[in-house]
Amino acid sequence: MSDMMDDMEGGEGVVKKFMFVNRKAPHGTIYALEGLEVVLVSAAFDQDVSMVFADDGVYELIKGMNTKGIEVKDFSKTYRALDGYDIEKLYVEKASMDARGLTEADLIVDVTVLDSAEMANLMAEQDVVISY
Amino acid sequence: MLHIVNKSATERNSLESCLRMATKGSAVLLIEDAVYAATKGGVAAAQIQAAMADLQIYALGPDLDARGMSARVLDGVKVVDYGGFVDLVTETNACQSWL
Amino acid sequence: MPMVEVAGKSFEVDEEGYLTNLADWNQDIAGYLAQEEKVEMTDSHWEVVNFLREYYDEYQIAPAVRVLTKAISKKLGADKGNNKYLYELFPYGPAKQACKIAGLPKPTGCI
Image (cartoon, each protein chain N blue to C red):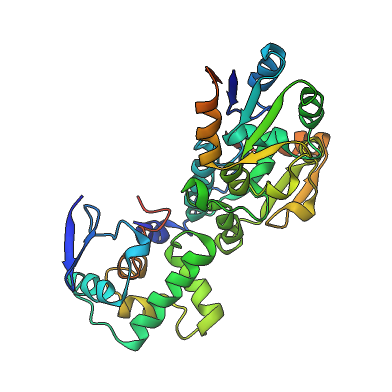
């Protein structure tokens, strides 16, 4: 129960740097949704969480999805709830956006755009990297 | 022949293989994550544009909508709904799914 | 899946009693679900339930308790956006009980 998990937060536990790397397009596979749900769960543990969107993962953040026709949940709206879960570090790789003809204006949430070298450094300083 | 591709062209080589092996006059239907290839500005756009000289390229509308890509479809790509998908299948002698 | 009958129509719920189809929800069903949870619905209860439905509509998830508390605080004021107030309304947990009555799935983050 989340009520229970909430009681567990705020302990004296060590804060680690967790990075969740999203590299899959939404809807075609379950990875994007699963990755997002794991991030929401991880928020209960008060860790230093970053989310990275690279390769096809940048497609997860596209504005204006309408999933009625394929009868699945439009979880792109859920990225906008991350702020309320205190997950504010969202990074997108510039090369991945460029390769897909996308810009920040096409995305549903505010992100920090990093070049590949900056992204590499950010990854290198994490304690845990979880990839989807 | 109707060729059906459902994998993202920036993640798998299914589209590339399909375009290499589809004979002139064949139809290629992009569904699920393959629809991104039919959109403007991406790396696969040039491949699709070149392929349109010999092939009919279709993309499934509901999959474009779900991905927020409907407004970005390349000129010359025909968008079909599920009914159109069925028509393509029944009009052709055989289907090849590039899984 | 178990079925329940409310006001002459039957609805599917999961093994924990959560409504399976969000779109099935109406006030009668909320009343039934509240009864099952032994919650007597007042205007204050409805305010939280309606808030949750709006939250779900906007974000497509049922929020974790602390997220709900913060969001309610922002929208309805700090006197309502706190654990004491919400647990008085929903003694077994606002996430569990209020979400169930609102016809939402179990909050993401529930184990």
